Image (cartoon, rainbow, N blue to C red; front, side):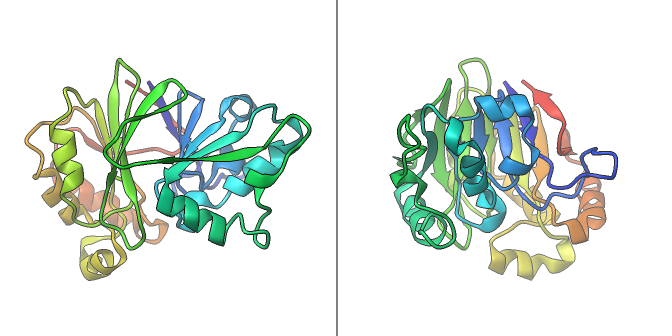
Length: 258
């Protein structure tokens, strides 16, 4: 399984910068998990192969360029882009994004080949197919309806917390898995802003350590993500100071394989 965190920003030479303002992972060049930077950072080849997008929650940094991605492809799509989300998140995307004002109701539009977008609602705790993958969503503790994800391809299994503060169901679900090759866990704010992190539904490095302690298994790979750019240097140092084996900060643009 190959996973890439799409960059949010680039330097003058077009190289990915470390600051992460938008969230979008691409799995095996075929499936997007969230869509913050989807339309901005896909390669030309990925733009032709990504047709499934799993949305964890409706915050702008996770869905910002989803409508632009579909708009860019509108005339060329021979099958709809499938947007997978819980029924509640589908409702919010219809109300707040694909509402005829912010962007057209793409799920109602045709381009001559058929519809250009379709919603595919899923239920938490029930595995559902997305392209060649099996995905299971588990609700987490954020300020809007949000799910973490477990993604498997038959050979590897990885998990994404999405945006969350302290939570329990997610870790219990991970403990039941027969294997888990990697965990992508958020760490948005430095420890000094622990109360802000709590009320906004996020983790600090210290809170991340407390969450990992809820697991009864040792993880071979833990990647910290969703670090607020304003606090990146401090958060990275605090993560390193935890001394947690196999914990590292994920690099935007780099392709990781399991």
